[in-house]
Image (tube, rainbow, N blue to C red; front, side, top):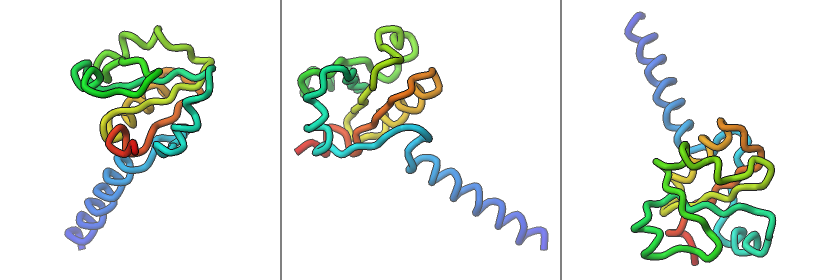
Length: 121
């Protein structure tokens, strides 16, 4: 009986862990690279690439500002909380972390690009 309860609790924890890593954080919008192409025309949006400077130099999208994920907490003052922030990285994982961080820091309009630069066609 105890073993069954332990197994159920472990199963629930594993499912919770997996879904928390895969699902977008509450209040973060998700867009595809195709949708981003339409968004790039907007002037009142902040575009942030959270990859390393080396990755950014190798290939980046015009209009994006490079603020590496590990520098984001100390450089967040460079962004306005009043404007939408669109975040991208290589695959979408670091930008998801950055999106969560920005939401926790009080940014209201945060959008993550699904698939990142890898999905850019």
